[in-house]
Length: 235
Ligand SMILES: Nc1ncnc2c1ncn2[C@@H]1O[C@H](C[S@+](CC[C@H]([NH3+])C(=O)[O-])CC(=O)[O-])[C@@H](O)[C@H]1O
Ligand SMILES: O=C(O)C(=O)Cc1ccccc1
Image (cartoon, rainbow, N blue to C red):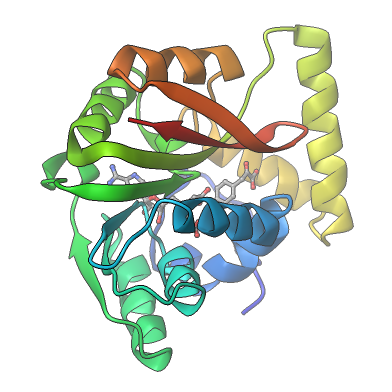
């Protein structure tokens, strides 16, 4: 279904509710530059670390696209766990995984309240940005603790630049991308307002510091387009 959520006047903050969930795959495809390529790379790099029996979590799995794609592109026997606190998202995730014949355990809860253990790979694409600073640092420590030695955390984030001139130019280029994807100026500005104080991006340096402070031995950026980036961190 086509995303028309911000085509009408909206006064509330952005939420992953029933309306957003019903158009979410289209929203992500048209709002996250190179979403499919970022996802393909996440899966390629995850595969380098996975073995038969490995446990994989996706934190903020939304409609389970990543775990379903991983399962289609991996011939190992994996334990897949998808976590999201939006019931509406997990309903779609359940239907999609059944339709694709992929066995995924879904947990509808806040990431903070779920036990993460013995994971070879933890994904969290475009989800940390919705977790309040300080809490975010605590969550990354929890992710580190949930990984096995040599396990990896693969995550994607919208970034902010320390340079205010360049930051404005990055945002302008992103809005040009959204326009080219068919979103109107009105939809773009409505969504920007709704995301204010909800999506809080870090700089590249802040992300690297957060990862290092949690104890990870190495962090590498594997993809970047303007202000959108994907990282892999090794425990
Ligand atoms: N505290 C939380 N606990 C659990 N879930 C949460 C929390 N906060 C937000 N979420 C969930 O995180 C997801 C973020 S979307 C991820 C896309 C996906 N990774 C993808 O690659 O397709 C990214 C985006 O919309 O920009 C939503 O489904 C929220 O319900
Ligand atoms: O659409 C935007 O303006 C974004 O910043 C990316 C995004 C994509 C999907 C949900 C929330 C934010």
